[in-house]
Length: 130
Image 1 (cartoon, rainbow, N blue to C red):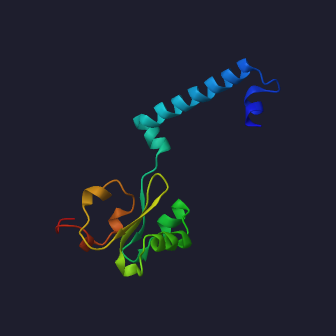
Image 2 (cartoon, rainbow, N blue to C red):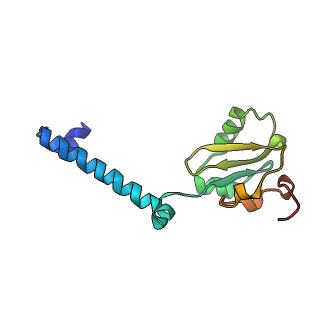
Image 3 (cartoon, rainbow, N blue to C red):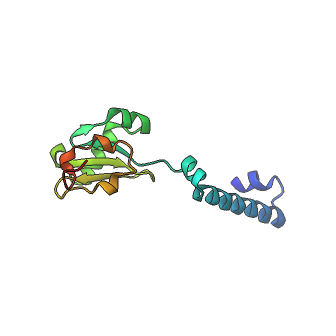
C-alpha cells in the first residue's frame, strides 16, 4: 500500500527505484540537518527531570506529557520499592525513562544539560559546591 502511494498506480521498476531514491535522499537530508547545530536545536530535545528525590515535578511531567502512571511503572521496572530509594527520574532525549537510585553521590557534569536539574536536592551530589 505504501509503495503505491510513493510510486503511483503503475508499480514499475523505474517508479520503485525513483521512490526508493527519494526516500534515501530525504533520510540523508534529515540526518544532515539533525547533525548541524541549528538542526540539533530543532530536532533533539534535552533530557528532563521528572522526579527529584521523592518529589514528582508536575510541570515537567505536563510539558513532556508523561503521566504519573508511567513514572510509577518505570520505578517498578527498576526494582524500586519506595520513593526514598530514588535520587531522580529522567526522561531522556530518546524517550527512555532513567531511574537513578540514591547511594553513591551524583556527578554534576552528568546533569548539566538536563532540564530541571536545579530541582535535584544538593545532598545528592558529590562535594559541597553547587
